[in-house]
Image (spheres, rainbow, N blue to C red):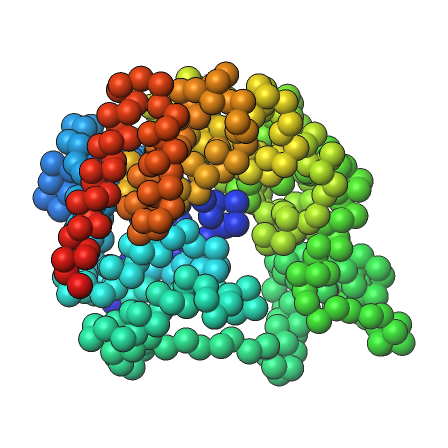
Length: 483
């Protein structure tokens, strides 16, 4: 790889699967931040390059990656377009944004992990990127768990479609078809080499200790007295009589989940609240939720960080593995850990700036506690958040993701809400109808439109439903004519 090549990675997290483009945003945030610390001359050069790439539509990228605004400056609002044209515009702008980083003198490599959880909008965008002739000097590498992907999974269908195209994803040999490689288990010689390196008598003692802490099995053996460091001989000692009698799972994650269970039982409230806040949580957020200072937060999470179950990063904490975070909890505890809808930000708190990012964060407790929402006022608040989140996804041309939000909001509202919360209910039905239409489910769209026409109480609402019906009829007529 070229010494000037940029390598960036992102992990698809299960709690972010409903947030369109979240993984791409994560990957490019780091890249943009690295530009910001360069010299003023280099930043000016990138400013010119990125402004030329995004043109008058820079706000589309800023909404996805807020750090870009520090380079290209504040951007004007983008004009409204019909949904299909808006989707094409977003894909065009993002493609040019990618091409600004991927050039012969500095190619770009992107690694995306856990693709089995990738949202539909990002999957569609990636498919269009890797098959477009303008996108060059980009290496896209993805990883997924094949035991969580069925033959009908959207990821496999996308890979198959891309591989059939003349310019599909490329493997290392330059073939025109995508190659899927199965990663087998590590062989014994490799494991022995890793253990030998961790237990090596050379190097600083602190470095060896940290290496042991990063290995769950060695750390467990050390905690149980099967492995110990002799300060006199400055070497590791182990008990070969007791070690063979110790039963270890084949899955290291299962071992770590067991340790996580012990820690959670030791400190249920704080650990479960941490889990409900996400895979990566800023310390400032933890301080606000726990009601304690940052120094107290570090003390409270010391044991979990010491065992390696969570990682202490610069300004945040992160779970080492998603299964540790997703360790099953009783619904009553999950509700207590995630809070109630009355504790979540109100709809009016999500306009612009940092509050806009709070909209994304609030999705996590909403998703984890949805089944425990029973009171009418709680359902109204959660449905309102669904409506706002869906509209935000729709504004990014992520119509499939938006449809999920609108559907979730509708599921919370029964027949009585048409009378008590008419505006909220009608808006959810109308938005979902349009997203079903844009996602290609014409039958469902037609069903929702007919219901809207029957339930609309004003001429304005009826006009909105008829407008959508006209679009539907026009598209349906064009589809039939093309057959």
